[in-house]
Length: 448
Image: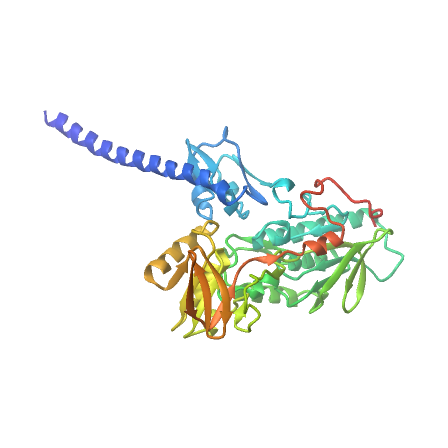
C-alpha cells in the first residue's frame, strides 16, 4: 500500500510538471503562430540574407531559436523551426551555425522582394561586369557581413586580374578603386594590399564610415569576424571606440592608399572596359570598382515647418553632451529607440519619443524589452500615432491621435531613415530588382 501511494505521488508530481510544460509549449506555439500571421502586416519578408529551413531535416531542438540575437525571427511551430518575423532578420547566420543537423542554410532574397535594391550576384557583382557592391548597400546590415563581402569581392577581382596575366598599356590605370572606408571598404582595402593590387580607396568623410557615427560605446559586433592581414578577431562584442582603434592599428601596419574627404561624383564603365571614377578633385581609371557605400545616404526629412532650425538634428554621436534638456526623438526603429534611451540616461533630460504608428514592429528583441522598461519607469515618454507639425525655438507642436499638443523643446532628433544613393547607382548603369536578374551583365565593353 505504501509503495502504491508513493508511486501515485510521484506520478502526480511528474504529471503536474508535464502538464505545465505542455501548456507552456502550446501557449508559446500559439504566440508564434500569431506572430507569423502578423509578420506580413509589417513587411513582405526578408530583404536580403536569411535562413532557409529544411523541415524534413529539422529535429525541432530549438537551438536556432535561442541563438538568434534578434530574439523572435524564428520559433518552433508544430515541432519544426519556422520563420515568424522574417523582416527582422539581418543575416547573423548564427542559426545555421548552431543547427546540429544542418537543416538551415543562409540564402539571399530574390531580387523581386527588393525592387529598390541593386541586383547583385553571389560574388557581390552588379549587373556591370567588375563593378561590385559590398556592405549594407547590398542589403546586409552586419559588420561581419560587410567585412566578409569586402574581402570576398576583392578575391574575385584578384583572381580575374591574375587570369588575364597582362598589365594595361596606360600606366595610370589602377587595378581597383574602392569607394567608401567603412567596414566593407577597409576589408576590401586590406585584401587588395594582401593580393598586391594597385588600389585606391576614396572616402567622403573619415575612415570608419557609419561606425564612426555610432553613439559612444554602442556595441557593434555580435560574432567573431576575420579581417584580412590580421586574422580572426575573436571578440563577440565591443564598442565603437574599440573597433575604430583596432582598424587604426591594422592600417598603421599597412601601406593603404586612402583619400579621405573626397566625394565620388560618378562611376562609369567605358567602351575600353576600364572604369572612370570622377570626384571633385580628380578622376581615376581602374580595372574594377568596389562600392562599399552606406545604404542610408542623405537623411530623410519630414517636411515639417521649422525643420531647418539648428537644434533639429539627424545624427546622435555623443549622448552625454546633452543634459538638462527637453528632447524629442522622432522615429520607431532601433536607431531612434537607442538614441531616446541613451539621451534619457543623461542627467536632467526629459525625453519624448514620437512614432507615427500604433506599436513598435521592427525593433531588435533587446531594444523592445529595454524601451518597455523605460516606458514603465517614465524615463522615456512614447507617443504612438503621433507626428510633429511644427518646430520652434524653445517649443514644438505635435499631433497625437488627432489632437495638437504643445511641448517645451530644446533639441529634436529625427530618425526617418535615409535616401539611398539609388540615382548614383542607376547613373552607373546598375540594374535594380525590378530591372533584371543577377545573371544579367550589361554590355559595357569587354573585361579589362
